[in-house]
Length: 322
Image (cartoon, rainbow, N blue to C red; front, side):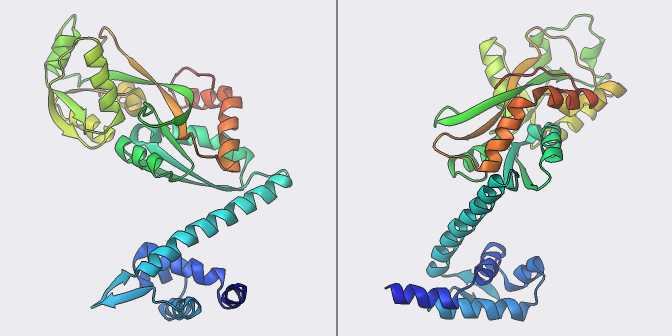
Protein backbone atom coordinates (compact mmCIF):
# COMPACT_ATOMS: atom_id res chain seq x y z
CA UNK A 1 0.00 0.00 0.00
CA UNK A 2 2.81 2.38 0.89
CA UNK A 3 4.52 1.69 -2.43
CA UNK A 4 1.29 2.46 -4.29
CA UNK A 5 0.94 5.80 -2.50
CA UNK A 6 4.59 6.60 -3.21
CA UNK A 7 4.09 5.91 -6.90
CA UNK A 8 1.02 8.16 -6.87
CA UNK A 9 3.00 10.97 -5.25
CA UNK A 10 5.70 10.60 -7.90
CA UNK A 11 3.18 11.00 -10.72
CA UNK A 12 0.63 13.43 -9.27
CA UNK A 13 1.20 17.20 -8.91
CA UNK A 14 -0.65 20.05 -7.22
CA UNK A 15 -0.81 21.77 -10.59
CA UNK A 16 -2.81 18.84 -11.96
CA UNK A 17 -5.21 19.12 -9.01
CA UNK A 18 -5.52 22.88 -9.54
CA UNK A 19 -6.41 22.36 -13.20
CA UNK A 20 -8.83 19.56 -12.30
CA UNK A 21 -10.54 21.85 -9.77
CA UNK A 22 -10.96 24.57 -12.42
CA UNK A 23 -12.47 22.11 -14.93
CA UNK A 24 -14.77 20.67 -12.27
CA UNK A 25 -16.00 24.08 -11.11
CA UNK A 26 -16.44 25.63 -14.58
CA UNK A 27 -17.77 22.45 -16.24
CA UNK A 28 -15.53 22.90 -19.24
CA UNK A 29 -11.97 22.71 -20.51
CA UNK A 30 -12.17 26.04 -22.37
CA UNK A 31 -13.53 27.94 -19.36
CA UNK A 32 -10.90 26.38 -17.11
CA UNK A 33 -8.18 27.33 -19.61
CA UNK A 34 -9.39 30.96 -19.68
CA UNK A 35 -9.52 31.07 -15.89
CA UNK A 36 -5.97 29.74 -15.50
CA UNK A 37 -4.43 31.52 -18.50
CA UNK A 38 -3.63 28.25 -20.27
CA UNK A 39 -4.42 26.77 -23.65
CA UNK A 40 -7.18 24.19 -23.91
CA UNK A 41 -4.72 21.47 -25.08
CA UNK A 42 -2.59 22.15 -21.98
CA UNK A 43 -5.61 21.66 -19.74
CA UNK A 44 -6.60 18.50 -21.58
CA UNK A 45 -3.06 17.14 -21.30
CA UNK A 46 -2.87 17.72 -17.54
CA UNK A 47 -6.26 16.10 -16.95
CA UNK A 48 -5.12 13.08 -18.97
CA UNK A 49 -1.96 12.80 -16.84
CA UNK A 50 -4.06 13.01 -13.68
CA UNK A 51 -6.41 10.30 -14.94
CA UNK A 52 -3.40 8.09 -15.72
CA UNK A 53 -1.94 8.71 -12.27
CA UNK A 54 -5.21 7.80 -10.56
CA UNK A 55 -6.12 5.12 -13.11
CA UNK A 56 -9.70 6.42 -13.39
CA UNK A 57 -11.77 8.48 -15.82
CA UNK A 58 -12.69 11.87 -14.34
CA UNK A 59 -14.67 13.53 -17.12
CA UNK A 60 -16.65 12.28 -20.09
CA UNK A 61 -18.35 14.03 -22.98
CA UNK A 62 -21.86 13.32 -24.21
CA UNK A 63 -22.03 15.25 -27.46
CA UNK A 64 -20.34 18.51 -26.55
CA UNK A 65 -21.44 18.52 -22.92
CA UNK A 66 -18.97 17.58 -20.20
CA UNK A 67 -20.09 15.35 -17.33
CA UNK A 68 -18.21 14.44 -14.16
CA UNK A 69 -17.82 10.82 -13.12
CA UNK A 70 -18.32 9.48 -9.57
CA UNK A 71 -14.51 9.32 -9.29
CA UNK A 72 -14.32 13.04 -10.12
CA UNK A 73 -16.72 13.83 -7.29
CA UNK A 74 -14.39 12.01 -4.89
CA UNK A 75 -11.33 13.81 -6.24
CA UNK A 76 -13.12 17.16 -5.97
CA UNK A 77 -13.89 16.52 -2.30
CA UNK A 78 -10.27 15.56 -1.63
CA UNK A 79 -9.03 18.62 -3.55
CA UNK A 80 -11.09 20.91 -1.36
CA UNK A 81 -9.55 19.35 1.74
CA UNK A 82 -6.00 19.46 0.34
CA UNK A 83 -6.17 23.13 -0.70
CA UNK A 84 -7.85 24.10 2.56
CA UNK A 85 -4.99 22.48 4.49
CA UNK A 86 -2.47 24.34 2.32
CA UNK A 87 -4.25 27.64 3.04
CA UNK A 88 -4.16 26.90 6.77
CA UNK A 89 -0.47 26.00 6.58
CA UNK A 90 0.33 29.25 4.78
CA UNK A 91 -1.64 31.27 7.33
CA UNK A 92 0.00 29.54 10.27
CA UNK A 93 3.50 30.09 8.86
CA UNK A 94 2.80 33.77 8.32
CA UNK A 95 1.33 33.95 11.80
CA UNK A 96 4.64 32.69 13.20
CA UNK A 97 6.31 35.57 11.37
CA UNK A 98 3.89 38.07 12.89
CA UNK A 99 2.00 38.56 9.64
CA UNK A 100 -1.69 38.12 8.90
CA UNK A 101 -2.26 36.76 5.42
CA UNK A 102 -4.46 34.33 3.56
CA UNK A 103 -8.04 34.20 2.37
CA UNK A 104 -11.10 35.60 4.13
CA UNK A 105 -14.41 34.51 2.64
CA UNK A 106 -17.34 36.63 3.80
CA UNK A 107 -20.99 36.15 2.97
CA UNK A 108 -23.06 39.32 3.43
CA UNK A 109 -26.83 39.46 3.32
CA UNK A 110 -28.14 42.03 0.82
CA UNK A 111 -28.46 44.91 3.27
CA UNK A 112 -25.03 44.23 4.79
CA UNK A 113 -23.38 45.13 1.48
CA UNK A 114 -23.68 48.76 2.59
CA UNK A 115 -21.67 48.26 5.79
CA UNK A 116 -19.18 45.59 4.76
CA UNK A 117 -16.74 47.95 2.93
CA UNK A 118 -16.48 50.23 5.98
CA UNK A 119 -15.71 47.28 8.23
CA UNK A 120 -13.17 45.77 5.83
CA UNK A 121 -11.26 48.93 4.88
CA UNK A 122 -9.46 49.57 8.21
CA UNK A 123 -8.76 45.84 8.60
CA UNK A 124 -7.16 45.62 5.15
CA UNK A 125 -5.16 48.79 5.72
CA UNK A 126 -3.46 47.00 8.61
CA UNK A 127 -3.38 43.60 6.90
CA UNK A 128 -2.75 44.19 3.19
CA UNK A 129 -1.72 40.56 2.57
CA UNK A 130 -5.25 39.29 3.26
CA UNK A 131 -7.32 38.35 0.21
CA UNK A 132 -11.01 39.01 0.79
CA UNK A 133 -13.90 37.52 -1.15
CA UNK A 134 -17.37 38.93 -0.45
CA UNK A 135 -20.52 37.21 -1.68
CA UNK A 136 -23.79 39.16 -1.40
CA UNK A 137 -26.87 36.95 -1.09
CA UNK A 138 -30.30 37.03 0.51
CA UNK A 139 -30.89 35.73 4.03
CA UNK A 140 -32.10 32.29 2.90
CA UNK A 141 -28.92 31.65 0.91
CA UNK A 142 -26.78 32.99 3.75
CA UNK A 143 -28.35 30.45 6.10
CA UNK A 144 -27.74 27.70 3.52
CA UNK A 145 -24.06 28.64 3.48
CA UNK A 146 -23.93 28.57 7.27
CA UNK A 147 -25.56 25.13 7.33
CA UNK A 148 -23.10 23.86 4.71
CA UNK A 149 -20.19 25.47 6.58
CA UNK A 150 -19.18 27.44 3.47
CA UNK A 151 -16.79 30.36 3.78
CA UNK A 152 -15.48 31.91 6.98
CA UNK A 153 -18.07 34.37 8.27
CA UNK A 154 -21.57 35.60 7.50
CA UNK A 155 -22.65 39.20 8.19
CA UNK A 156 -26.37 39.25 8.95
CA UNK A 157 -28.90 40.95 11.19
CA UNK A 158 -31.18 38.20 12.53
CA UNK A 159 -29.21 35.14 13.59
CA UNK A 160 -31.02 31.80 13.10
CA UNK A 161 -31.88 29.92 16.29
CA UNK A 162 -32.64 26.48 14.86
CA UNK A 163 -28.95 25.50 14.94
CA UNK A 164 -26.07 26.51 17.25
CA UNK A 165 -24.19 29.50 15.81
CA UNK A 166 -21.54 31.74 17.32
CA UNK A 167 -22.59 35.37 16.92
CA UNK A 168 -20.60 38.58 17.44
CA UNK A 169 -22.84 41.70 17.34
CA UNK A 170 -21.07 44.92 16.40
CA UNK A 171 -23.34 47.61 14.87
CA UNK A 172 -26.97 48.67 14.98
CA UNK A 173 -29.08 48.41 11.85
CA UNK A 174 -32.10 50.71 11.54
CA UNK A 175 -35.12 50.03 9.33
CA UNK A 176 -37.22 53.13 8.68
CA UNK A 177 -40.52 53.90 6.92
CA UNK A 178 -40.12 55.72 3.59
CA UNK A 179 -42.39 57.20 0.96
CA UNK A 180 -42.30 59.56 -1.97
CA UNK A 181 -42.92 63.27 -1.17
CA UNK A 182 -45.74 63.07 -3.73
CA UNK A 183 -47.50 60.20 -1.93
CA UNK A 184 -50.97 61.19 -0.60
CA UNK A 185 -49.94 60.20 2.94
CA UNK A 186 -47.23 62.87 2.91
CA UNK A 187 -49.92 65.55 3.02
CA UNK A 188 -51.30 64.35 6.38
CA UNK A 189 -50.36 66.33 9.50
CA UNK A 190 -50.29 63.16 11.57
CA UNK A 191 -49.82 59.64 10.31
CA UNK A 192 -50.50 56.42 12.19
CA UNK A 193 -48.80 53.11 11.59
CA UNK A 194 -52.14 51.53 10.65
CA UNK A 195 -52.67 54.07 7.87
CA UNK A 196 -49.12 53.61 6.64
CA UNK A 197 -49.34 49.81 6.45
CA UNK A 198 -52.80 49.95 4.93
CA UNK A 199 -51.74 52.11 2.00
CA UNK A 200 -49.95 49.48 -0.09
CA UNK A 201 -46.59 48.30 1.23
CA UNK A 202 -43.76 47.27 -1.06
CA UNK A 203 -41.95 44.39 0.57
CA UNK A 204 -38.92 42.17 0.09
CA UNK A 205 -39.22 38.55 -1.01
CA UNK A 206 -39.73 35.70 1.45
CA UNK A 207 -36.45 34.70 3.05
CA UNK A 208 -35.22 38.29 3.30
CA UNK A 209 -33.97 39.46 6.69
CA UNK A 210 -35.59 42.89 6.20
CA UNK A 211 -38.95 41.26 5.58
CA UNK A 212 -38.58 38.97 8.58
CA UNK A 213 -37.74 41.93 10.84
CA UNK A 214 -40.78 43.85 9.54
CA UNK A 215 -43.11 40.87 10.00
CA UNK A 216 -41.86 40.35 13.55
CA UNK A 217 -42.37 44.05 14.31
CA UNK A 218 -45.92 44.04 12.99
CA UNK A 219 -46.76 40.90 14.95
CA UNK A 220 -45.34 42.36 18.16
CA UNK A 221 -47.27 45.63 17.73
CA UNK A 222 -50.54 44.18 16.46
CA UNK A 223 -50.19 45.77 13.02
CA UNK A 224 -51.73 44.22 9.95
CA UNK A 225 -49.23 44.03 7.13
CA UNK A 226 -50.78 44.13 3.64
CA UNK A 227 -48.05 43.77 1.01
CA UNK A 228 -49.02 45.12 -2.40
CA UNK A 229 -45.90 44.02 -4.28
CA UNK A 230 -42.74 41.96 -3.68
CA UNK A 231 -39.22 42.86 -4.80
CA UNK A 232 -36.00 40.86 -4.85
CA UNK A 233 -33.68 43.51 -3.40
CA UNK A 234 -33.67 46.67 -1.32
CA UNK A 235 -32.64 48.75 -4.33
CA UNK A 236 -35.56 47.44 -6.37
CA UNK A 237 -37.92 48.17 -3.47
CA UNK A 238 -36.50 51.67 -3.13
CA UNK A 239 -37.02 52.40 -6.82
CA UNK A 240 -40.57 51.11 -6.49
CA UNK A 241 -41.18 53.73 -3.80
CA UNK A 242 -39.50 56.42 -5.93
CA UNK A 243 -41.79 55.47 -8.82
CA UNK A 244 -44.85 55.94 -6.61
CA UNK A 245 -45.85 52.27 -6.42
CA UNK A 246 -46.29 52.40 -2.64
CA UNK A 247 -44.56 52.85 0.69
CA UNK A 248 -41.91 50.65 2.30
CA UNK A 249 -39.78 49.99 5.34
CA UNK A 250 -36.13 49.92 4.29
CA UNK A 251 -32.68 49.90 5.93
CA UNK A 252 -31.63 53.48 6.55
CA UNK A 253 -28.28 52.70 4.95
CA UNK A 254 -29.92 52.02 1.61
CA UNK A 255 -31.79 55.34 1.35
CA UNK A 256 -29.41 57.94 2.80
CA UNK A 257 -28.78 59.69 -0.53
CA UNK A 258 -32.48 59.83 -1.42
CA UNK A 259 -33.36 61.26 2.01
CA UNK A 260 -30.68 63.95 1.69
CA UNK A 261 -31.86 64.95 -1.77
CA UNK A 262 -35.52 64.95 -0.73
CA UNK A 263 -36.43 62.24 -3.24
CA UNK A 264 -37.76 60.20 -0.32
CA UNK A 265 -39.10 61.19 3.07
CA UNK A 266 -39.30 59.20 6.29
CA UNK A 267 -42.46 59.90 8.30
CA UNK A 268 -42.42 59.68 12.07
CA UNK A 269 -44.28 56.53 13.07
CA UNK A 270 -44.74 55.15 16.55
CA UNK A 271 -42.47 52.16 17.13
CA UNK A 272 -39.95 53.14 14.47
CA UNK A 273 -37.15 52.81 13.58
CA UNK A 274 -36.91 49.04 13.90
CA UNK A 275 -33.51 48.33 15.41
CA UNK A 276 -31.61 45.16 14.72
CA UNK A 277 -27.91 44.42 15.18
CA UNK A 278 -25.37 43.41 12.57
CA UNK A 279 -23.48 40.29 13.61
CA UNK A 280 -20.50 38.25 12.46
CA UNK A 281 -21.72 34.65 12.45
CA UNK A 282 -20.23 31.17 12.01
CA UNK A 283 -21.29 27.64 13.06
CA UNK A 284 -20.45 27.08 16.71
CA UNK A 285 -18.64 23.85 15.88
CA UNK A 286 -16.42 25.67 13.35
CA UNK A 287 -12.94 26.69 14.39
CA UNK A 288 -12.37 30.03 12.63
CA UNK A 289 -9.27 30.27 10.48
CA UNK A 290 -6.44 32.46 11.74
CA UNK A 291 -7.50 35.24 9.36
CA UNK A 292 -11.17 35.00 10.39
CA UNK A 293 -10.22 35.06 14.07
CA UNK A 294 -8.02 38.10 13.44
CA UNK A 295 -10.90 39.85 11.69
CA UNK A 296 -13.33 39.13 14.54
CA UNK A 297 -10.80 40.44 17.08
CA UNK A 298 -10.07 43.48 14.91
CA UNK A 299 -13.75 44.44 14.74
CA UNK A 300 -14.03 44.05 18.51
CA UNK A 301 -10.96 46.19 19.17
CA UNK A 302 -11.60 48.90 16.55
CA UNK A 303 -15.28 49.72 16.79
CA UNK A 304 -14.47 53.42 17.25
CA UNK A 305 -12.60 53.69 13.93
CA UNK A 306 -15.29 51.66 12.17
CA UNK A 307 -17.87 54.03 13.63
CA UNK A 308 -15.85 56.97 12.30
CA UNK A 309 -15.94 55.46 8.82
CA UNK A 310 -19.70 55.34 9.00
CA UNK A 311 -19.87 58.91 10.23
CA UNK A 312 -17.78 60.10 7.25
CA UNK A 313 -20.22 58.29 4.98
CA UNK A 314 -23.06 60.24 6.60
CA UNK A 315 -24.59 57.38 8.53
CA UNK A 316 -24.90 57.55 12.29
CA UNK A 317 -25.29 54.27 14.10
CA UNK A 318 -24.58 52.88 17.52
CA UNK A 319 -21.68 50.62 18.42
CA UNK A 320 -22.32 47.35 20.17
CA UNK A 321 -19.55 45.83 22.25
CA UNK A 322 -18.79 42.22 21.32
